[in-house]
Image (cartoon, rainbow over all chains, first blue to last red; front, side):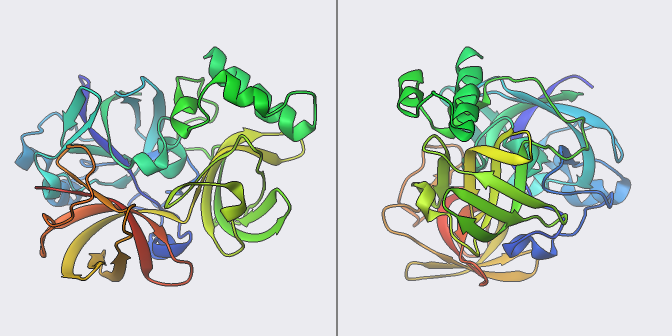
Length: 137
Length: 201
């Protein structure tokens, strides 16, 4: 897979506190906020039918299944983290065309969600949404 | 990387009570979380828990040491120092970490299991939501079928419309639209204080 630029955010999983209390362990059954993991929008036909990145013109999201490794690079600071697939997501088509920027660097469309442990390794959690590059890890 | 290593060394020294002082931290540069994320070697394998990260609910606090019960059953001991950056709806001080709060913490795991915290995010939530209604200083949200009440905090809550700079004008938010909310959970409720709302214009 060639590197894909887009937006990265974070999500909780593993039934932790607050609104994450019923988050569950994800499509792969292994997801936990404290692990280096991510959600990927094309883990199965069923997953892809929900996330539909193609509706946003993002067609480079190869089919990858639980445990596959991707690297995510924060385009704001160059920090990189390698994680494995634990869930289906993000729902790209809900935010078609959305853009995240830092300084003069921008990227469009949500292509990956990281766990809090992974996201906080490359950015502050309160940043919420940042431009990134995703590649095979 | 020198700055990051230096900062980590400083945190470690602060926890161990060696001669480094937190006055030195500010001389090394900003203590904001963003400065701590320059590329560093990845410690855990993908898919594995990060020993330098903690998630959980604060069950006790003894001075600057916080005990947090993780959802994976682990009990984390987290050392707060003057160099720890704390976010609780906004950047704040270590005294705002309270029993009952939920938190995520990143730092350096010390021998003996104490996590010297570089950054702590208290009650932070990141919710993909559907806006179901808008009231005076409040947004009614649906998050995966759960009703969430989002409180607008004057002077703090801001919206980012499609990558633009955050602004305090929330008037372009629309009922029926999707949004993403960074906020601070009010413990043991379905309510959050709104920090940043990402939405289409």
